[in-house]
Length: 118
Length: 168
Image (spheres, rainbow over the protein chains, first blue to last red):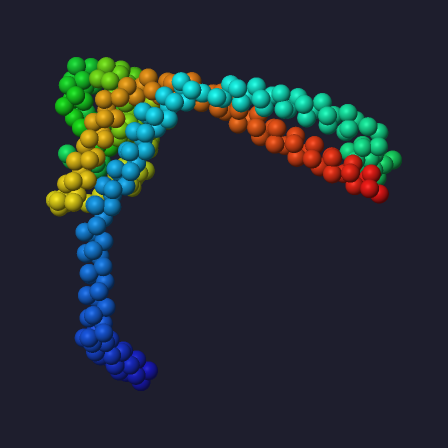
């Protein structure tokens, strides 16, 4: 009895699907999807070639302009010296401040040690 | 010009002269290529890679520019070639459906051809040596700047704290 009911239900469902598959809405959506895929395929190669042109253009400029410019007119050494000077200047100013007995670091360390090791 | 999609270079013989003529006639550097060495044992792999490197050097080809030549082997090896363990690991970017190009695509291909020729004519080995030379001081500068930024932050923080204390 149950099987018979299931069969009739599935048959009805199949008919419904068949009707839906033959409707204009469904056919139009399938056609739209196919057109989109076709368009994508049509422009896929063009876009790939455009991207390759850009990539190789950048590579070329890196090889012919940026690397030679970096080698011949490098400012890195000067910047390193400047940074080192600035670093030693900051260290000279900040280390005595940190080493003071009432400095924040010393006070915090004091509190930490007192809290955990006393 | 050919569309730059992957092309396999099939090696039938591992003799120097044969490889040299094969690579000279092939599209290596003009399109992305790969050489499948997965049948080789570890003992042979390194010597073959050295042989390939010397042939490339002799022909003034670069293993990565303008288009790379990948080696496929499941064994680890040190080489200037990019090495992957299977064809599935090759970059998807160079796997494209090949079709007859239209006018616009032909125009782009011609432009691409000029750029590839220009890059092939450059002495990329020397340029990359220069690049490595210049990259070391750049790294030093980067580390130094990072350290300086950290110290400046501490110094600013210290100054702010002392000002606060003085106000109190």
